[in-house]
Amino acid sequence: MKKKGRLQEGMDADIIVFDPETVGEKATFTNPRQLSVGMKHVMVDGTLLIRDEKLDTNAMPGQAVRSPIVD
Image (cartoon, rainbow, N blue to C red; front, side):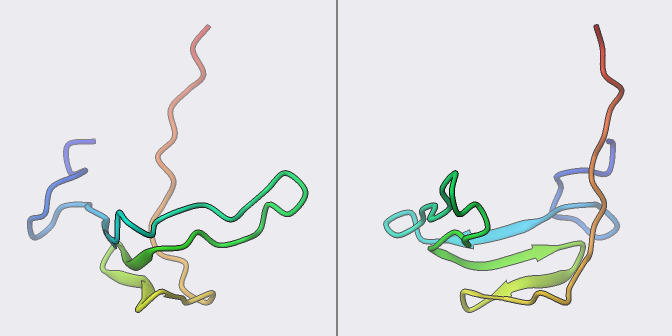
């Protein structure tokens, strides 16, 4: 986790550019696969996932951060 969250060369940081006036969720329980709105750009591990509000469905950068389940 020491490399997480810094905007610095060699660190793991994701960048999201959004409009707070328009950002929102369209997904519902009956239709959970709807994309959010208002996300202008999203970059993960140096790869743009969303550019100009358009999702690149072929991009699969990054890794999930997982920790053990604690009782």
